[in-house]
Length: 55
Image 1 (cartoon, rainbow, N blue to C red):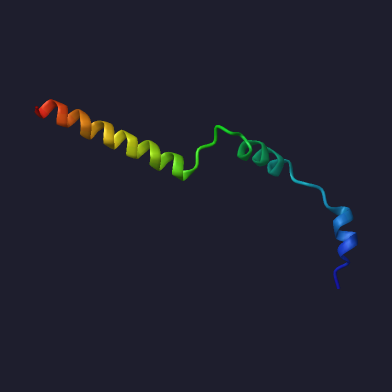
Image 2: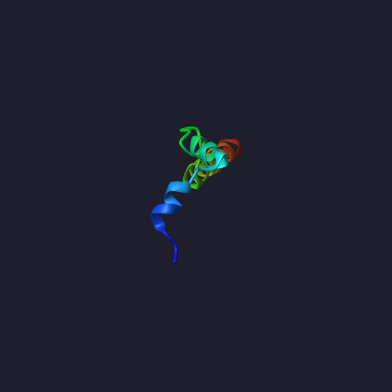
């Protein structure tokens, strides 16, 4: 049987995990909703520009 307390005492966090935590907590990280909003704005701006050219 696994001794939980013994395993927790041996635990050492991975260096890669700490690097990922720094990256994930960076407020400049864009998620999919940010990408979709930017794409939508770009499409709308292009559509408005095309309508302006047709007039």
